Image 1 (cartoon, helix red, strand yellow):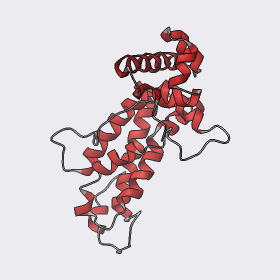
Image 2 (cartoon, one colour):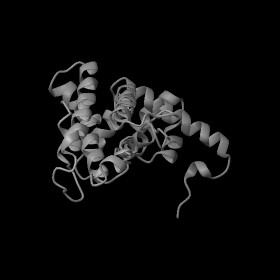
Image 3 (tube, helix red, strand yellow):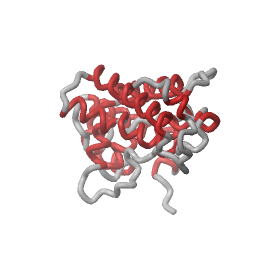
Image 4 (cartoon, helix red, strand yellow):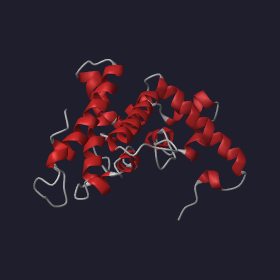
Amino acid sequence: MAIPYEQTGRRNQKARTREALVAAARELLATGATPTVEDAAAAAAVSRTTAYRYFPNQRALVVAAHPEVDRTSLLPDDPPDDPEERLALVVAAAARIVVDWEAQLRASLRLSLEPGQDPTGPVLRRGRVIGWIEDALAPLARTHPRLDRRSLAVAIRAATGIESFVWMVDVAGLPREKAVSTMQWTARALLRSAMCDGGPVRAVMEDQYGSTCCNVKL
């Protein structure tokens, strides 16, 4: 297996050069551009030849500039027990990431949609948000044990990610604040609907949660 260039000799200096290129790419992305390796090299005052040793193409550069949030949970240290409250906290935190990193996420989304790209490639395919949502839904294991929490988390992610945000802002013409509040409302509605009608489920048990459902108001 080939060893990445920055992991061979003078690692500290190479790490700084790589960080400078990534930082330059993120600054360019923030302006709405999708930088090439040459663009990042020029902005970081690094030679093109050197830059290509770190990033062989534009896709590799943009992937490196993609926001990394190394957290297993977006919940506070002492989270509430109520799944709706937990989900609201997670969706709000995830929405802040979307807004704060919008330009970078848009660039990653563009690259992931290019013809010929592997749909399971690294850009926008890490699945971290699904894990954060599943964490928020954990109390349902006790109250709604037959509910397929993974499928519910996927449904909520589909309605609250950068893809939905871009559609609401660019196509529906919503202000960003309205797009965020719509994603939060949608996440809450999906959760309440799942608790009410029992789906998505691993196996259906008719009316097991009927009394709870009657008290839910969308």
